[in-house]
Image 1 (cartoon, rainbow, N blue to C red):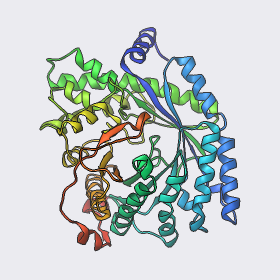
Image 2 (cartoon, rainbow, N blue to C red):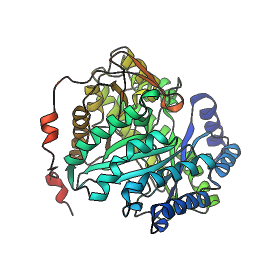
Image 3 (spheres, helix red, strand yellow):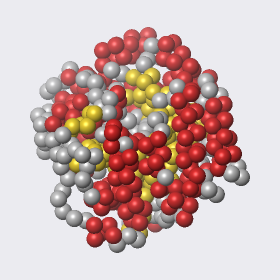
Image 4 (cartoon, helix red, strand yellow):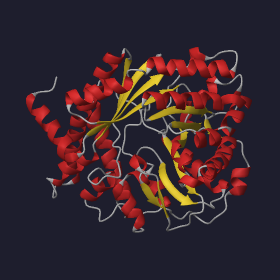
Length: 451
């Protein structure tokens, strides 16, 4: 239970430092919804979401009022849809539209799981499913998609990566009137996790219970505020401050997660410790790094500072929750973090530096706008680079880039809300098309043989 001082401290963090629960995400298995036809399956999927998630939004809103902690998003993740539609993959959009309709009618902010797991090979039905992603993301409002193309255990599926570069391009073109918004809802993973509460990469793993509640906490402003009281502290002391602060943030998330699961009749899954920023001032991971002594995020020292932050957040958080999972780190999405946005606008950060930073944080090249004429092979090469970092370092990495149609370097894209805005960053001018065109499987590293 919370003591009196902890309650008062939490209230102050909410009122002054942007503490919030970023998302309560209900994971729902759809395997029991598979029927003989796509139409029957879509109807069963719609009915399943409407039944199981019916109380999600009102329950979470009630918890927010009772505990005085803002809960920003109410979300649902589902079994990877490619598995549900395997008998009729060309009709997968029927299920996608049914999911989006259910999310809209229930007031769910985002629904994740229009996904495929192709890290070791791509079955015929999955190849067809992947080609439906651009259409579905263009036609739906709340549905999110993810594809896992590699793992430390199996290697990297370069054939899938080649296809995903083309799919990202097509998704951007189909939503050109919205600056390529469809790509904001599409993530390509290596080592995807099955209990991720954050979008756009959430899906409900096949090893999970029928219905699970996962919670993502967020408190970049709280961490920055705590560090501001120790401007001369050495980095050992700064790490201790971050650990203690992460503990307090996670305690709030644990409380909400267990109570939400109880009221919804679902199993409590995990608390994700990730520091998830927003475009609001005072809620930035980049500003934490600058509070540690960097003149601007992106300068030399940024990767070291981010590594320390990420580690300290995890060390503090694991002591506060009985079940930690998801991605659990520090997010660096360019368009969703005011500090990252301003650093990119000033030319202080590049895609190459962002790639280096992903070696030590969650999750990858995230919410980065690139020129609309960027070749699909270049996007595939970005995905391959991030997948290699994830595979070798046994961590989750991902790519969510937006090749903004008609935009060039220096232009800006605007998505609004939590998705924010971003300047269009330059990409390397070299050509990787021959490398990507080779296809095949990059073998798993030697440490994959651990058993």
